[in-house]
Image 1 (cartoon, one colour):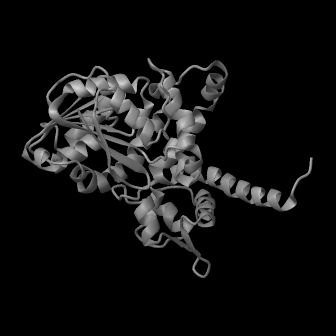
Image 2 (cartoon, one colour):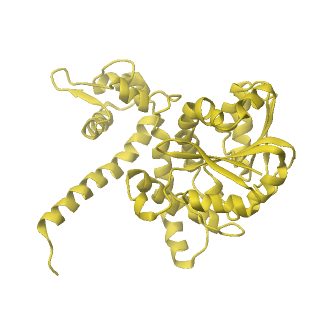
Image 3 (cartoon, rainbow, N blue to C red):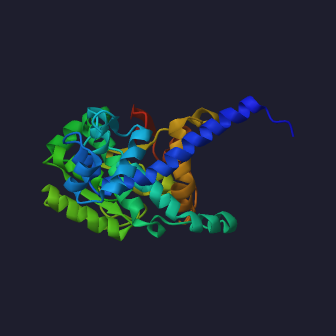
Length: 351
């Protein structure tokens, strides 16, 4: 075997970068759980000062802070031995409601690592792994990872991109949010449109309980209900809008879900599909965003679909052409890309 030393060294540089990222991920989860980033956002601190502020051990904090500084997640001033967060780092690491908040993504990564023994089994036997079979870190991390994007774009950009829908919601439309998880998307819409009525559906009962409590805390419990139901069987009819956020590709039978959604809509109603950003061809997804979504899809999305009836396994990088095909097979005749971000594609689908 002939090895090109230059190419090998370049690959090893990539390996060191990736290994550092993997090892770093767990430290972010610890810092988030202990409130270390939030404490550091107040002012520069030494390890001892941060330890006193957060009631943690200073020696462990010194090592943790050093790891954060080496990763570029905090700043270090050697002259004062102080660690600090820039405005941008604080925005991403310490401000839970910011559109750039990222710790939830690392919770998802932790859940993937905890699923490795199960993944080894299903790679060999071809079975599925349901959403409900994952570590709870996945449920909480998914909400915290996706909520900032929804908060930044859903009301301001995505709903206005749907023809006439913003006015209908303002006037008091009825909405079904299918696959609502912890209810972040449902609650964001309810807060923005106080005359509209919202029903959230998800097959995962613990998530529905969490969503109902979140709605109560948000003060929208009088207009928002959450129920355990699948995408093919959720109750109700005559909806002005049905939304499906980042979960159509997870469904075993997305075509069956599409048919049920079509039947549940008013004749002039709209189905909004929000999916991970993806091009139609594999080679066009070989980039940092595709890397994230293909990795998540390997551990979460594809096994989740395989565990359900139909097992279509669209995957998190399904692409527009395949999603259009699902909508058309479900009886829809109008399908257009309405909006997009670096992480999401938004489609307006009508009967």
